[in-house]
Amino acid sequence: MNTIYSALIAPMQRTRVDVFESIFMVFLGLGTLVGIVVVAYTLYNAYKYRDTGGAGDDKDRPSLGELPTGGKGGKKLFLSFGISAVIVISLVIWTYTMLLYVEDPTDGSSPQEDALNVDVIGDSFSWSFEYDNGVESTGTLRVPADQRVFLEVTSGDVWHTFGIPDQRVKVDAIPGETDTGWFEADEPGQHNIKCFELCGEFHTNMVGTLQVMEPDEYEAWMDDQLTMEFEMVDGNESPVTDGYEMTLESQEGDFEQTYTADDFDENGTITINDVEDGGKYNVTITSTDGQFETVEKQFDMTGPVSETYTLEMNATESDATASDTNDGGDA
Image (cartoon, rainbow, N blue to C red):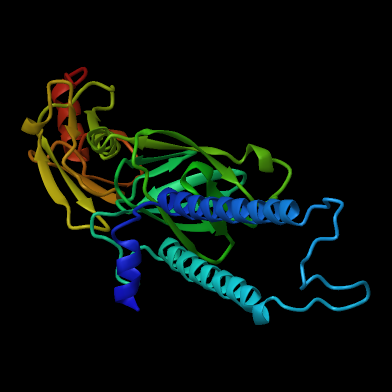
């Protein structure tokens, strides 16, 4: 069965659009051919048996009140039924095979390693998207051209149906359940995302945009989403450029990196763009000369991050500074 399936599908189809266009064209072609044959045969018989005003000499013509005879034992009838059955059965098998491919383009195997996986959530009349690296977006799904995209769709409130008409995508979004779908857009461009389930008062406003991008453009966009910018300031909101180091650690991945004050620029800022995954991160800032208190923070990276941290003076250092500035008062 797998061999037949591969032989029928692999050489021909790649995207959902290809599959449904092929099915449409085959049905249109066969329908047109059958229509031409039926109409032509009807016109032929209408001409052949037209009323010419003469009795004719057709011996097989039935008399009034008699059943027709002849017909060569019904051979034409059986032949027409046989040909029709072969065509219909072949068409059903071929169409079913094509739709099996739509349901599971991997033929039961695991998804392609280079495929893009996106979680889709319908909630409060909007669509949100979470990529497999933790990046999130609302309203706009950005994908590269010529790359298969697998969708896992669910709902956070009521029943919805996620649909991209141009890509022939339609997946139910049901609370507590996850339904899957896929598509592969072969050209850059914009496509409408709609909800095909009457879900409430603002159902018609539950729309979004599929943005298909050139692969290089998509990679640049994703790199921007995985960019972190940190700024160190003191209590007076002035840049701090020395006396500390910052450790950045992912809670969900294996990323852990320490940056010294020398890695920051003269404005007390640093831009980090070498991370590969979003998600939750821990930030620990420690003093290298004992003048600042330790800072421990967390953040959830679902897009570009910009954080500002205030470095408070260590209590001992604050007392020492106050002592140095005290003139001792009156003797």
